[in-house]
Image (cartoon, rainbow, N blue to C red; front, top):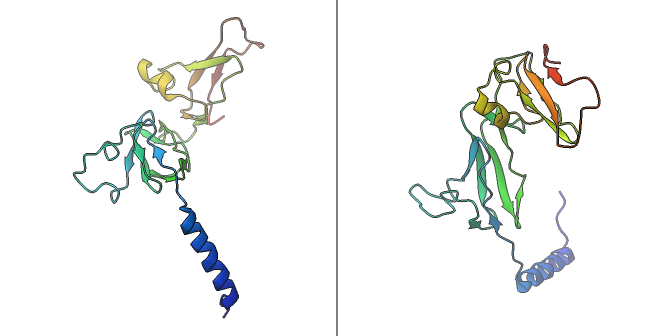
Length: 179
């Protein structure tokens, strides 16, 4: 069995005393905006039931102390983009949220031949054709971000920013059996 030597204990005690005397302080964090198609909620021990403070209500822009926990919960039909199941935890650590808050993306769990939407083209974008992508018109552009999984047969229509044109003949992309 190994133990800390008596001389090391004295050095550690001196360092600890210096740290305490210097008054180490940690920076608070600011509650971020809620993720699209989800929300962040505080850890229940930080906010006992019935607590009505701005921090406990999750009001973006509210300052919370170092060590504050947040959980990201996605709306029904959406999942975390970091691959975690359920909800995801992040902590205020000296003025930063670690790990950073994940996003909520549309859940296409019923389609085993789905594809990840490609990155946006340089100086351009794409939009899904709603019927083929099993979305309604309003939702299609809001839910589909690069990396979001889309069902097989989803069609993406490419377009360029003003002053640019497509460099090849492909103006559409179709998800076929996961590719």
